[in-house]
Length: 374
Length: 261
Image (tube, rainbow over all chains, first blue to last red; front, side, top):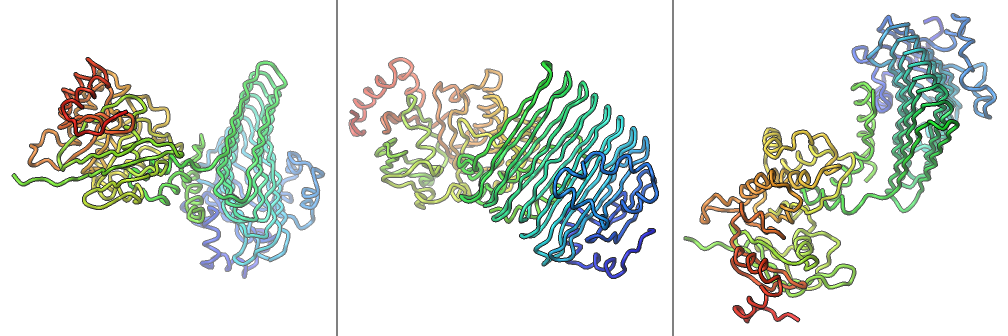
């Protein structure tokens, strides 16, 4: 670790209440279950440990010092001047993680990266670069959360993904914030020929606002899959979408979102651009209203620029059908048990190509908060 | 032989849906060990009667009482009725995306005091092993739906079961499987003295009666019980002279039955 890691902060992440927060976003700090661990508290890297030789993990500050070639990736997928938030994130004190799987190496066990908001009312600025070199595979759990009691603040996160030829990245981002935290991730992925990019997003806790619209640029015969599970509680605003620009022949995309409003406002977006021949894309937005308050707006968009593209979408928003509750009650479940089973089923997105370990983390994150839903 | 008590008593039941009268003055007394076959034309209220007994909240009881094992259950939630000992196989169960059949079966097994191995044994018997991980009822064919419902009933292991057209849409190859399973659920192979299970089977074709020797047949007509008798006789009469013919014959034989308009 070439940069200073503050000892007091190092110790703090061992505290039980902090460990619990980390665990809620998939961060285990357990070498037997992770290929590497990266923890950033506010702007400071507090822990980097790697247990695998197939993957490099370091702070973006260190990576920029070490690798001149990183300039070819830094701010190349996301534009500096994209909006006010990217410009704000383009600051001297920015930090973040650099994760790179080496050519041909398959890292099945996930790398965990945690971005921790410690200081109240502060702005956390993060810039991540993730590269899967040719023929490699990389699984990442990125957990973002705030310290107990830190109810306000802002998280600005730039993430640039590069999936090289025939490589694969599975990226699972789990968020757990508090009621007055503003979150503006800005992400983009380049998915090279024959590559696969799988992005999963889970948000189940209150937040002031989450606004994001990650984009994947998908080259020849490559695939991008986005899945989101979003719960908006009272006073939360979540405007989240995923976009896939299919620009190589034979590329494909799948965007699936499951949103639940329990008093919060959700805008579920999705956009697939068929910008090359023989591309295939499917978009699915399903929403569940659990309260009289709040709203869900689904905005699926499809765009075809060639005749031989196959793009489709389905969107459905509703409440839990009484008929389904009654049916499960007729099997002996109480009304609450039936409702819970239906909600759990609704949130159970069958994500293709995701490792069992990540699937478990997603299920765990969902289970930890689902009791608040009814 | 000690005389057995009524498991279910439906007393002067009147039923409304959205203000419309569906059933009136329905009386039905079922003793422990007895199986009733329920006949009637489409729309006569057969499924509604079962819905009222199981407690579907869409159906409001406008008059009368439903008494199960000596306890009035008019306002008891469905799950409580299940715990008291009722079970039902629906004619067209809803599909629930994301809730796997195996999850529902595990719950049924818990209620019925059955184990994980029973789930697999019964699933195998009913040829539903390949459906366990699928969302319940989603994309199931007509026959698969019926087998899935029976599988759930088997695991629930209730004393009083209602089956809404378990034989409709079932191909010839599977009808005997369905029939044998219902016979087992209703303990029809157990002697009448020893038998604990009772139930109601709605059937249009009567095919199921080739496998299950119901004790009584009942015709529900225009929301009322119109005829009670031997199920085979009733079925023959219906197939020869239609429901009306059968009912007028019944009325001649049993003038005490409610008069029909």
